[in-house]
Image (tube, rainbow, N blue to C red; front, top):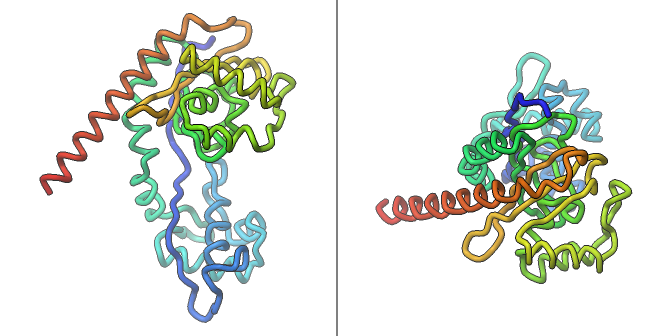
Length: 283
């Protein structure tokens, strides 16, 4: 394994901003894909890490909106600060960073990052932080390892049932949350992906008993992952995992590191909550 580490903790800026109709639009906020709000989010969603500067024509093509409509909504987003313009190019604006920095995910990532770095140094492999959002795992941070063994970039998602992170969180979640995953479609990403509901339920029970969840080439061929939950106040707020080539073996030697790291992050989160509560009460 390459001993050189990289830190990939950046997430795409994103926030739910309340946008009213542009002057003269006469378009309702409701009404599905015909509303100005849907169109605004369609435009904001076309920016990613690889293409963070886009022309109006590119925005129109990637969002699927007519160029005249894209121009009108882009103009409004620039006025609000959600987009910024430089010459012919547009990028996400400072308002998006401001909104994104207020999210609980950002606080979690900032608290966890020093501990993730230590875990990556100790294991020599990719360490990840993720949370459950609906039926998916949202990846908040990645430290260490090789890019070729990286399941998805930070800010992207994978279905929870095919990831160690997802199974670790689900094992410590309530029945309703688990049912959301078990009762939905269990898609196959690799030949090893567990798509049988009974088998997945058994894997969750095992993860609960061992406090460790596994992914044996279920998300990426040739990649094994182990994950443990970050439990605060009796529930899994998130999970951390270590990912390594299948040739390394089962990875049981990494479990103590994961468990120690999870406990430290959980304590740090509780301390952060207590500090915020004291600050709020004294304001």
